[in-house]
Length: 293
Image (tube, rainbow, N blue to C red; front, side, top):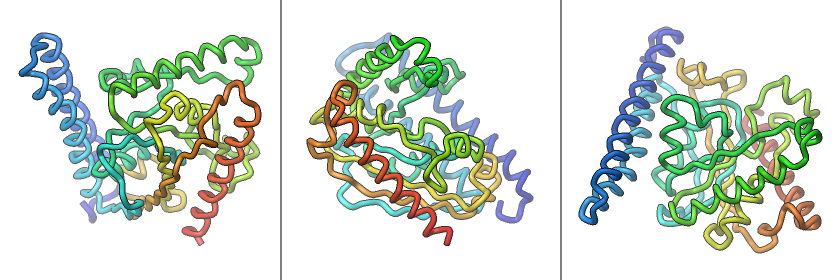
């Protein structure tokens, strides 16, 4: 589709992504019913295999649609990644396409990504049901004004996050957190008065809490930087093939004990973890600037 006009490519891509999502949902729902109707020992291996293979099939279908547009990913990953290891993953966030890109780049190398998601997304057709079946954690996202008016909500959110993270101990996967909490826009960047040129300010609480809850299960953080062509980072640009080359660079960071602690109650740990994440974001911002230069 390289020589097809961009808007037509965008429509074709959206149709292909929709077919991919709907087909995967139908297959997953049938697997879910099979698990409930035939909870016998000999069926467990088949059901587990389906739960494992269906996301990979969805990723392959999406990868096919992306390659048809003529776009490509340039991926740089650390060595030694394993499908049998739990990881924490964080990334900058600019577009809904980030999710498809992260699955495309990381899925052959690490266990299934499970995103920390806004609770409102639980009710999005297909997406909400799929992520619920796979045990994605759904969390409240409150503004500073709301928390100031209802300070008790903060504790409720922490408890919800802890319960969500507990599920990961029994359902293998790599936790994925967009530390910025929302997609980058110039308006949000200006409102935050962010110190970074291409990034919003990172929020340390969700990542720190995830690491605390999972404890020794996770010993490595994968820090991913997604770099789109300038002014072509929307999901529509992604579908239209305007983002002809997207760079994905990742590095692994060992999670020593000083990066795991009680973020809610330990002031010293909270300050050190925020300093660590801010430094990580500064390096990420410099990397993006270097690529643009």
